[in-house]
Image (cartoon, rainbow, N blue to C red; front, side):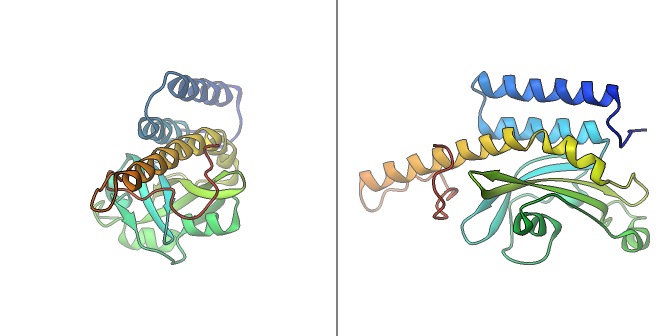
Length: 204
């Protein structure tokens, strides 16, 4: 059973995982590989069913860049703009949120393919004060209820995840510049438009 409190063991495991992520970045691994590692380590530390990292794109679209764990609540690709999902609530508030729907999960949780998360924790990723994405962790019905005590663990990885998102945005910015320099009719964007939201380039 995973403890929700900062025990010495949990503190040590969290520090080890964060050191691994930091070394991953310093070794020059790709930003997407870093986000996948963060999703995996966060899920393991919390003993959660699923963890994912989403990036905010132009048009208020969240794109899932990394997922680890159960697929029942982790579709791939972009999520539609607007709405009141927990991830968007955290982004709008600019602070972590913990939400849950216990009754709904009991009603539909018998079939894992149709299960919905009973407990969801979201930590926004901020770069220079601007929201650029979110780390989301979820448990389905019958699993441990995520609490505000878990926020500190996930928050340890928010700076590293924000750095990875900044790398992605910077890379896409360079691709757009290359495409513009090549002239009309050339597509050098690599199929993604991250970083064109008008925010100041967070990569510095």
